[in-house]
Amino acid sequence: MITMKRSISILAMAASLFILLPACKDRAAEKRIAELESRLAQLETNKSANTVAAPASATPEEKPEGPLPVAVYETTDHDFGTINEGQKVVHVYKIKNTGEAPLVIQSAQPSCGCTVPEWTKDPIPVGGSGFVKAEFDSNGKPGIQNKTITVTANTWPKVTTLRFKAMVTAKADMKGPKK
Image (tube, rainbow, N blue to C red):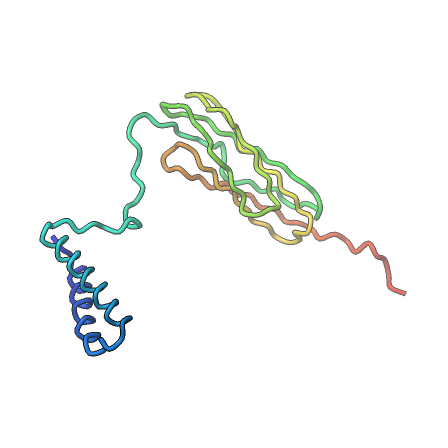
């Protein structure tokens, strides 16, 4: 059945045809009218066949069928506390596969270039463990820092967001007193 939104769209296109008809003195207007007529005919064909397709962006990704891995993180948040600017700190997020299929981490994308992730590259078997390691370089990052790593895996849902924070104490000015 055709939706109300689609009916309004068809009526608006038909009305625009009548508005453009007096402007047929140039080739561009004639071409536009032909395009609109073609689109209107296509919509009418879809209406009569009762097959109005939803836009591709409206279709959410569906849960895959069959056995799936389940990634259980020991924690998805970490607080480094107060660190000094220029200090590099590391945290390892531990993962256990409690699902029914091997777990494959496809990527781990940091929110900032100051964070370098590493992760288990081999499939994690059912009952097995893996990791995502975050190395944060605080150089040039004074103040409160909140960063993320977006982990994509063959789980459902596909994406997990790992978070960490740190309070970075600014470097003291090493130039000394001015003369």
